[in-house]
Image (spheres, one colour):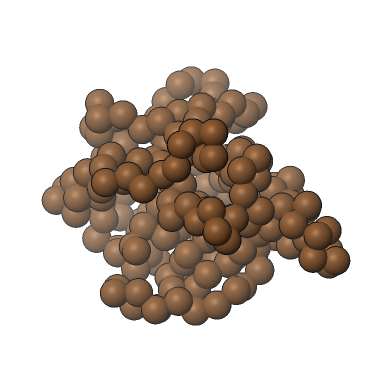
Length: 202
């Protein structure tokens, strides 16, 4: 079930437009196209759940995305082709934070530009409502950790979960850092590089 607040407090499924990508709410009829992307095992080789390319595992992943809300389809802007997905998760109004995760893109779109624009769009939207964006990543997923670090993410803590420890990174809105009297910890404006396959395992 969704635990999202009212849309005026946080809209978890916006439509976001960029030059390279377009993000919109994930729909049930996206299943086949998204599974075709996720079926590439090399996307998941460093991921804690590295069998997500398997049909039954992906079926659970997709069902959870639809149930929890916050899931976005990522389309190539030029062609309209579905090339991946990402999610907002775990909105915390008291701490003014939300997580971005469960991100993956088809390998032909790896290299930084598409991931960078996608994360910029998602962070800019999130910072309309909250002061902090979190990324929760498996310790061995070095590719995703580097990608988050390159967009300004700083390591916050190791978090125990039922599926093992996870690295938590944070990027704060400029206003939050200014209020704290310190330089901004990432502002969502620096393009990312690297190949995403983040979170996806609570």
